[in-house]
Length: 225
Figure 1: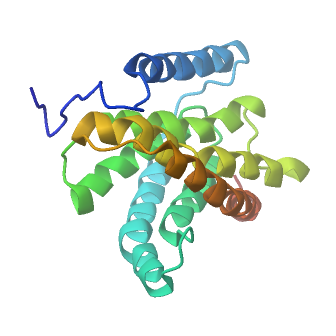
Figure 2: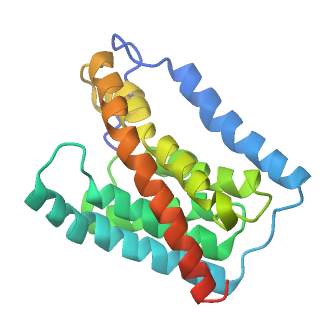
């Protein structure tokens, strides 16, 4: 039975067991929420926060699917992904301005809505909302928890950005190629390629993450956040 083009394949050789993926998607956000609640860093979003999230997600959508993708085609160098890196930079800036737990996950969900409307269509939903929000978005929110509500500021901003960059290099090769793509559409799981892609992408993404964090410090200061 196929739902919204999701085939639900769970017996493809090499595919990550669905139980492990389910445990991650349930345990990771729950644990992070509980820690944030214990540290008393959960705050309500204001109207201005939602405005920043909407504007940031919109800019990230335009960058990733129009400007950045065009530049990537012009450069055409493997593992140089300006579209993806630009999205990370923009959303790190948004979170550095808002500094509230959940800003990362919500930004990625809004980005995914706009991306579907502008580019992908709605095939595969709601899995992509879960995937984007609870990987890329959750990894940014992790920094909010680690810093107790003061992300991307001070002398450790670059290290925080580098951590985000490292974590952002994992979902696409690992979770997408190792589970979601075969689960949704079928296909071969090639762990040699997955490992190679991770090794080739994370050094670049770490550097871009650090630069993005330092940029976010300047932007947040400039607008008085």
